[in-house]
Length: 265
Image (cartoon, rainbow, N blue to C red; front, top):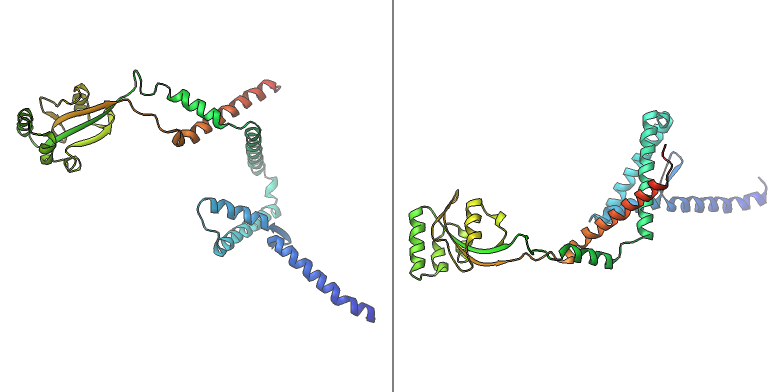
C-alpha cells in the first residue's frame, strides 16, 4: 500500500462511519438490509400519545420492537411468495381501496369543510320548538313511600290537616328522597314505573294524590311541584355530532354525484 493511499484510508473510514451513523439516525431499525424509517416509529408513537399514552423511552422501545416484528413477518411472507396468493391479493386490494376511499373523503371534506355557521343553523333547525306542542314534558315531583295502604292514607289525612309534605317525607322508606323532603328532581314520565307516572301526570301543580298509588316498591303519596318543557341540550354538547352528520351528508352527496358521472354497465 503506497503512502498516499495509507493517508487517504482513515478519511474514507471516517466518512463511511459518519454516513452509517446518519443512516441509523434516520431509521428506527434496519432488518435484513431494509430500513424502518424513524418517521414511521414517530407516527405510531403519536397515535398512541393521542390515546393518552405518555411518550417514554419504554413506549418507543416497545413500538420499535413491534415494527421490527412486523417487518420480519412481512419479509417472510414475501420470501414464501404469499404476496401472490389470490386471497392475499384480494385482501390487499380491499385494503388499498379502503385507504383510497378515506383519502378521497378527507380531501373532499378539506376542500368543502362544514362551517360553524352551518352547524349553528342545523342546531337552530333541530331545536326550534323543542319541547313544544307534542313534546315530552318534564315533571318535578315529590313522593312519600310507605309499606302499607293504611300508612299512605294516614299521610294523606295529615296533609289535609295542613302538615307539611316535606316534614312527612322524612318517614319515607326511600332514603334518597326522604332527606330532600321527598324531592325527585326533574324527570320525564318514562323515568318512573307506569302506575307512578300515570298518577303524576294527572296532577295539577301543587296538588298531591288524594288516593295512595301502589307500585312494586310499596304505596306512594305523590305531589307535583312543577312542569316544564324540556330544554334542548347546549350546542357545545351536540355540536360535534351535528358536524359529523353534516359531513356524512357531504360524503353522501359526493357519492351520488360521482355515481351519476360514472359509466356503470
